Image (tube, rainbow, N blue to C red; front, side):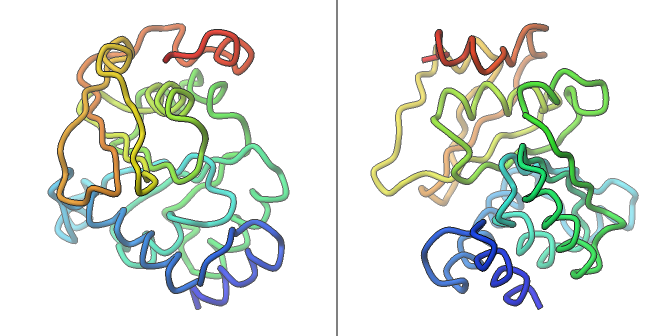
Length: 207
């Protein structure tokens, strides 16, 4: 079923190159990182303590859809700025019988992160191809509760995440077993102005 859904995503032009099996495998690696940093499992749902995850730039359905199929105790919000992609995600969640634990928000993360429903709400934020490191960090940071984590997929060569700049938005890098991800813990409450508007970020990037 998940392959059929992702194949539909590709037909619509929402999913990039590479085999669907590889897309699923990479998505499940996000799950392994989540397990490592959150240290929860199926018992969390039974205890009414299910982690809540946000996928920013979720439009193609990865990593969130395979991740949520594989870990049915997770709750999630899928965020994308495109109405077409959001419509697909709503359909996909219904098709995969997860609409009861997954919501789709259509809008820009830097704006949604200032709304009460989103601000400092999430245990984890996952990002795969959302944007440059500075944009991903700043936008994701406003969604995280203190103690939450930002999990970002990295290219093979890695990228620079200056510790001073990350500390300025309350994030501190943590080591995980899978070197294909950069992971940051939210160690302080976010400043009210962060994330800044996209125009300001473009003019004065975080780093």
